[in-house]
Amino acid sequence: MSSLGNSNNIFWQECPVGKLERQKLINQKGCVVWITGLSGSGKSTLAFALNRQLYSRGKLSYVLDGDNLRHGLNKDLGFSAEDRTENIRRVGEVAKLFADAGMICIASLISPYRKDRDACRAMLPDSNFIEVFMNTPLSLCESRDAKGLYKLARAGKIKGFTGIDDPYEPPLQCEIELQLIDGICRTPTAMSEQVVSYLEEKGYLEDQ
Ligand SMILES: Nc1ncnc2c1ncn2[C@@H]1O[C@H](COP(=O)(O)OS(=O)(=O)O)[C@@H](OP(=O)(O)O)[C@H]1O
Ligand SMILES: Nc1ncnc2c1ncn2[C@@H]1O[C@H](COP(=O)(O)OP(=O)(O)O)[C@@H](O)[C@H]1O
Image (tube, rainbow, N blue to C red; front, side, top):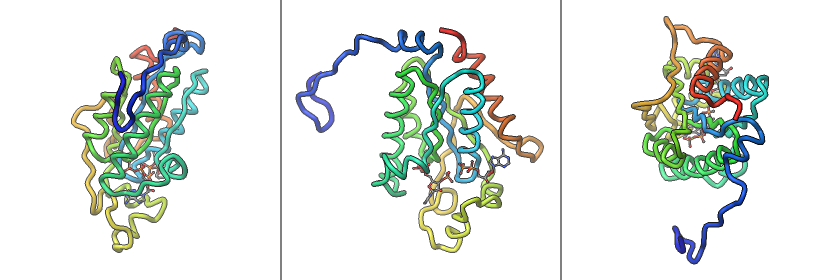
């Protein structure tokens, strides 16, 4: 390829050590676990619980959390539709690199637009994109209000807050949906175990 996007005269350089070799070396299979949901739905909590459980099993994972990435890589982005799309695109590209390195990459971002999540899925070969939908009702997210942002959004002090005056498009089809059972939210550990079981079932935790 000699031209791509805004860069001209660039050529893909094939690395002599491939993904399969890297996976064999670290004995795991690279993939992306993409956690989407409203603010306060429990994305970061699940991401960190999963990170810990995988670590305990000797599997290396790394969390790309929306809040944290906005302190660095994405510090130039706000919350307009365009900026959110660019935010998700960049994190999708980074997650793809982590998965290519052989890591289990856990991305936890609101990622409110379906087309942006689907674009990230399309970046990953061989269905190595596992979308986890935190289907926590807005009323519960708002009652938690861990950062006080819903209160500010309701008071009109934050404009364009997801779920209040900005859209959230739930997945139409996702690999895992985590929701209340009989109106009760399960523990982060229980939710994380469900994700680990899925990874196990699909062979992501098998020795390579
Ligand atoms: N307007 C608005 N809407 C939604 N969220 C807001 C907004 N302003 C600030 N925040 C804080 O930013 C965190 C979400 O960042 P993300 O990068 O995950 O958002 S997005 O995927 O680009 O929509 C989100 O963190 P989480 O609560 O962890 O989801 C909020 O703390
Ligand atoms: N499974 C859960 N059960 C009870 N409380 C939870 C659970 N998951 C998250 N929380 C609490 O909800 C709040 C928001 O969680 P957080 O992981 O920060 O959500 P998000 O990353 O989606 O904004 C935190 O105070 C957290 O302790």
